[in-house]
Amino acid sequence: MSEEGHRPDPGSDDSDHRSFANAAWSIPSYVLSGMAVYGGLGWLLDRWLGTSALFPIGILVGLGLALYLVYHRYGR
Image: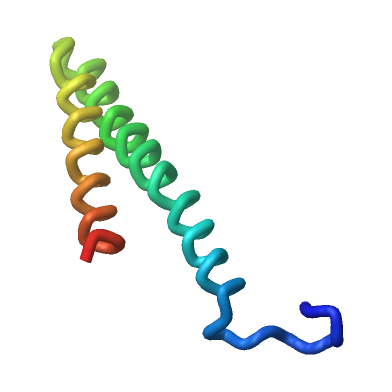
């Protein structure tokens, strides 16, 4: 809230800073969670199948999908 006790204009600079801050927090969150989820799936498949290559492949796939999602959401 502003000093006068009412909400600022939605088109003001404050809302631009908030949207930038939200993007600044969500981009690394997408990347880390994509790597964690697909890396975890790769690790589980490695344990189940007795292999050792699916964990790093899962991390790279998760990174690629997360970067695509970030580009699709914020890169336009």
